[in-house]
Length: 95
Image (cartoon, rainbow, N blue to C red; front, side, top):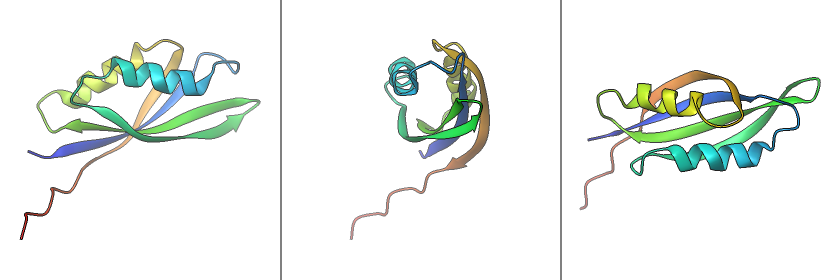
């Protein structure tokens, strides 16, 4: 079975929100089979920044919806957007 990479854009409730704490909080809410692969902060305007994050999750029925629901209910999250979803390449078989 493969894995999904779900790229999300997450906006905080406030310009004073600690974005690194938001990332840690979201990561803590994800199921054990999923995790944040990487993230970066992207300035928007007027001191507001967004988190662009890649979540890796197993390729299972309903997994993307579950990840979206978790992120939408995470503390200090105002809005989120799924930017892209793709499959991770499978591991190469041993020689």
